[in-house]
Image 1 (cartoon, one colour):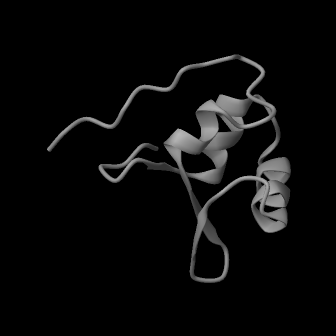
Image 2 (image 1 turned 60 degrees about the vertical axis):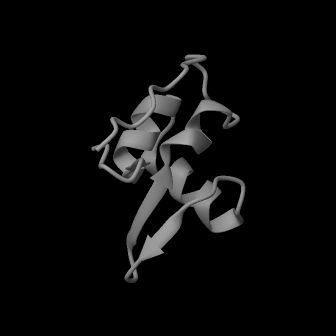
Length: 68
């Protein structure tokens, strides 16, 4: 779920990277994938971090957030 601030959820990041959500959470915890933690369990990942993340097996160039 892209939002107006350019972040995606763990599930969306996993889908875009072609890996399991658990692997995304492990990368976030290890600091190998940047993200912001909201509360005790919710992570938001900058969409821009996914384009160059290891594991981006689809080689996708992700679109920019829509303006305004």
